[in-house]
Image (cartoon, rainbow, N blue to C red; front, side, top):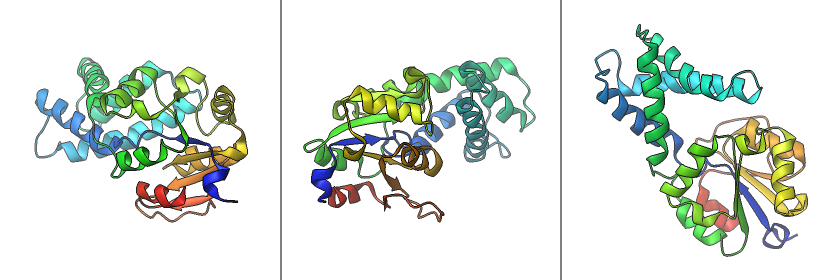
Length: 233
């Protein structure tokens, strides 16, 4: 079947698929570190960012499993990251957490090819966001970066009270827009959360794999550049 006729509803992940999470987070954290005078030869923005990402990914996994509440995740990731550099100051960690929540979603860098691809797709498909994120952050990202206008609905894990890769968040999103599984496609960069999650629910997937990482899964489609969606769909 012609893919242009088969699919009607495209569901996108947000972070690292459209909104450049890595670059935007790095920019925000670099500004924050200089503001608090934390930068030195041992504590560089690049090294701190790598430490933060490692801890943040682990904490988000706990959050998805219901083992860590939202506020603890937001604060403790910085307590632990600072602690690795011998800085044990919960008050400072709280300030950094609040600043990061404020400044990170104001960053506007997008993954290469995002606007070109969305300009093409929005003329032919209904577009939606499914994101494992908090409402106050994800909606700001969409609005500040100019992405909001492309999407009919945004579904956050906080709103739905279910996180990818759980079936419930996909079921809720499809049901809310009256989308049939066979007419729906999930596009994302995370093999476990986006691709395995969508496959487990029974909808086709596009694995956005810009680094060309090797893996053992078999997504419906795989791309290295977002602009490949223009020829795929």
